[in-house]
Image (cartoon, rainbow, N blue to C red; front, side, top):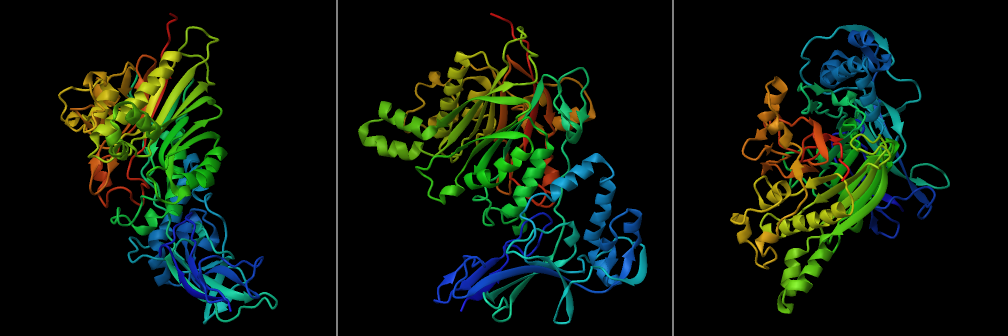
Length: 592
C-alpha cells in the first residue's frame, strides 16, 4: 500500500511570502521509495496523496489596543493569554509598523509586492501563538473571551486547528505571523475518500515577517547642487534613463557550505527570489542587467514577473563545454528594459568559447591545443542589446534622428589565478563592441561582474583604454595570448559611472558620505562584493563619456553596517553583491 516514509522541511523557519514545499518521501506498493507526488488524478494501487496545512489556536482572552488604534483587522489583535501576547510581541509589533507605513503610498506598494510571489494556498494549518521572549514595552490589552477565528476548524489531540491550505505547497501570509504551521500528509483510499491510516505531520517554527533592507537613495552628481531623492519616488526625467547592474547570486552557488554565516532560510531560493524581486523592482530602473540568472529561474520566475511590471526580457545562458550540472540550472545574463521607454532593435551574443577555439586554431601549435582550450574555455558569455529610446531626441541635433543605445551585459567568471584568460575575455568583448561602434554612432554601456578589482589589467583596459606594459599581471601568460602587449587597447571612451562620486567638486553631507565609501586611489567603490572571505569591487557600469553624462547614482552601502550581523548574503540582502544603478543623459551630438 502507498505510505509515507518521511516528511522533511527545507527550513524550519517559515517566512511571509516564502513558499514552503515539504520534502515527502513515499513508499510505493511495489516497495520502491519515491519523491514523486501521487495525485488524485493518477492514483497508485487505489490510493493517492492528500495534503493540508493548519495552524493551532485557542480561545482568545486578550486584545491589543494598539491594533485598534492602528485600525488593524480585529482578528489579528486577539491572543489566547498574556504569555502568548508577550511571546508574540516582537513579530506582532511589525503589524503596527506596517499599519503606520501603509498610511503613505510607499508602504502600500511594498505591502502589495510583499505578498504577491508564491503559489497560493496549500495543505497547511497555522497556530495561534506568537514568538519572542522580550516585550520591550507593555502594550495595552483588553481582556475578554472573543473567538480568534471563525468556525469550521479541525480538532486534534485536544487542540483546535485552523486549516489554511490543501496542497503540498503553502505560502505564509501576514496573517500567519507569530503562528506555527503543521503540515499533514496522508495516503487516501480512492473509492472511500478516507485516509488509509493516520496522517504523517511535521511542525514549523513560528512564522516571521521577511526582513526589509534599508532603502538606498539616488544621489545627484550632475548639476549646480548635489542632492538626493528617495528611489521610490524617482522616475527618469525626460531625456534621461536609468541602468541597473546586479549579480544576484545563482541558487546553485548559494550553498550553506559557501555561506555558512547566512541562515538557511535566507539562502533558500523561494525566499531570495521574492526579496531580490522586491529590491530590483523598487529601483524603478529603465534597463536592468542581471548576472548569474539560472535558466529555469529566468523562464519560470523572472521573465513572467518582469513582464507584469512592463519589462521586455532578453537572455543568454552560459555555454556548456565545461558545465556538468543540471541543464536547466545553468546560469547566464538577463537584460530587461521597460517597453514604454525602449524598443528592441538587435541582439548580439558573445560566446567566449567560440573565440577561444578560433584563437587556438590561429596561434596555438597542434600539440598544445588541448592544454590551451582547457585553460581558455570557461563557458562565459556576453549579451549585447541595441535599443531605441522612445522618450524623445534630447541629445541629437536632428530632431527626427533615432536615439539608439548599446547595452552590454557580461559575467567574466574566471578563477583569480587565470589572469591572462580574464584579460583576454575583456579584450575580446571590447573588440566586438568597437565593431558595433564603428558601424553606428551609438552611446554604449558596459555592465557586469568582471571578477576584476580596480587596478587589475581588465579594469585598466576598460577604464583607460590600454594596459600598463609593466603590470605584474602580464607575467602570467603561458599561451602568449596577450602578446604583443601593445595590441591590448581599444578606442571606446569608457568611464566608470561610479567614479563620478570621486570627481565631484564641493562639500556636503551626501557627497562626503559617498566619498568615504570610495577608494581614493582608484576612484571606484570600496566594495561591490562582500563576503566573509572577500570584500572588494568587481562590478561596474562603464559608459561612453563622449555621448553620455551621469546625472545621479544609487548610493553605496557602508561595509560596517553590512557587517553588524553578517557578511553578504544576509536576510536583508539576498546576494553577495550589491546593486549598482546610474542615471544617464544623452549628450547633444554634433553632425559631422
